Amino acid sequence: MKQTRLFCLGLTMASCLSAFAATDEPQNDTDKYAVVTNRFNANWFIGVNGGAQMYISDGFKLDDNKWKLVTPAVEINAGKWFTPGIGLRLGVAGYQAKGFSWSPNVGHVYKEIKPGVYGTKWGMIQTHADVMLNFTNLFLGYKENRVYNAIPYASISYLRGVDQSKENELGVGLGFINSFRVSNALNINLELRATAVNDHMDGIVGGKNYEATTAVLVGVSYKLGKKGWNRPNQVSGEEIAAVQSRLKEMHQENQLLRNQIGELQQDLANATQSNGVLPVAACPANLANYVVFFNINKADVSQKEEINLKEIADKIKQYPAAKFRVTGYADEQTGTAAYNEALSKQRAEAVYNVLVNKYNVNPNQLILSYKGGVADLFDGQPRLSRATIVSVSE
Image (tube, rainbow, N blue to C red; front, top):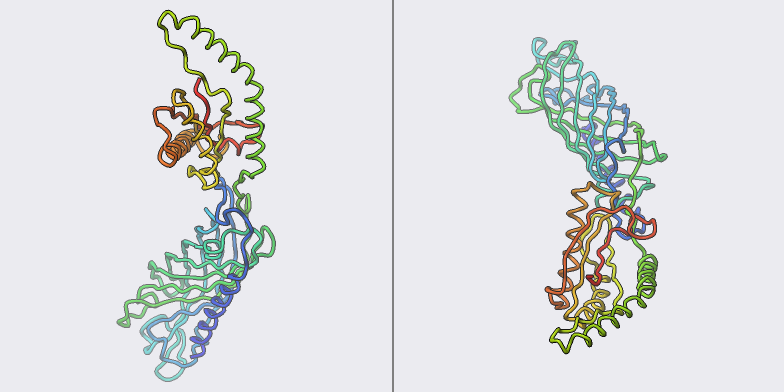
């Protein structure tokens, strides 16, 4: 069974190449799977394939020389990657299918091969839609310049016979693409595909429920529009420290005014206490705003930020008569207005929950608010707007 060994060899090559991909480490990013969703016109591609196909029909075992059934196949396709791991593709392939028949009157016979065995052939056009999964990106993380990607797919096909055959049937199949990066725009692909189709596609009803067409193809694909995915901008520790430092400076600049307010309040209390008016509670003058930063599209408080929140929680509890505002924000450039409003609310609630549930801050001291997406919260750096600010309520 030379043909069987041929396709087993092809599948073995795919497995070996997948093992090779496992040694290709992803980029050293904070989150190797995190990317920014691109616009609809990004990550499209077109491709062309050529190779060999074999149709496995009812009369497949009538002759030992199965090489006679191998015929050329060509294909054009186009598709889009919606994420680094999930894509869709549409393709049209054309080839001449061949088979064997036991009677000159059954099937699309064109000649007698040997006594009692007749060769059949007919044209075929196969249109297919494929759901592709890039296993390399899904399991190893996205890496733009990775040399090899292993891409299995499931497909639905519409097969139409031409020439002698006028049959048309739906088929289902599986395939595997070994994709090799040549440049940022060009890939070379080795593809294996098998499609199951109704029993009478070859014009012979032999009692089986299905037949199959198999193919080994080599081709190229060219990427259109924006290529690849951007990494989300992570806020570095230095940037966080710089913002906190700036907030402290701003607080110090207002310190004199706060002190003056405190002195005026005390004077007012002294002046009115004799008339039975209670003094106004002193504001926590030395308490600066605190900022909690979030990653893009995230509303969970990191372990590092939870530890830092303990300091502000302790200070809040030092002033039980004071009110503090917990305000959530989002980056206006990433997401719709409705999405950013919901995200900023979730961020404020996340900080609120840490202060109340983890550090036992009195919830009556906290005022929850959210501002949605903002363009520039800190010094022209939009990604720093992915934050929640804890401040003294005026």
